[in-house]
Length: 64
Image (cartoon, rainbow, N blue to C red):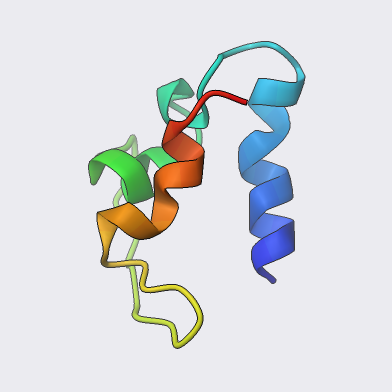
């Protein structure tokens, strides 16, 4: 499932719309990185990735 989420979140970067996924306002990745977005999403803990830990999503805040 995480690979699908990564694929969706990284599409704007691959399309060269933005340099960082966290800068694409229509992506839920902004909720994970900045804890803000256009809509409120409910984040739940996960045994693989702690979605409540902002450091767990540093890959979305890095340039690709």
